[in-house]
Amino acid sequence: MDEQTRNQVVKQLDELRAQVAERLGNEPQQHDPVAAHVDELRALVQDQPSKTQDAQASASRLERRLLAWEAEHPQLTALASRVARAFEDAGL
Image (cartoon, rainbow, N blue to C red; front, side):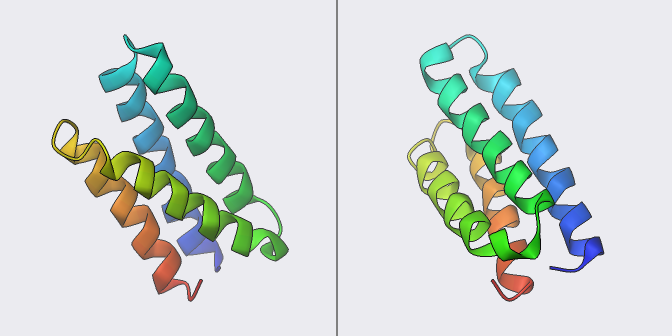
């Protein structure tokens, strides 16, 4: 993943993390696992290129988790989809 793509994905993950905190902050049983997952994915994206498969798998798990909330939280799902597309565009 090139530096520009990496920065874009990190920015999107930061936005997703903020939206999760805003929308699910009053529901720690839902917020905490998603926030931890976003943080894990962010760390993988910023890590060495050898971790790209881990990052791709983590992005896929996050997207599946948010898809379960699609009706209630369409913006979270859309943002997770953008992150997943960034991985696809990077060839992951």
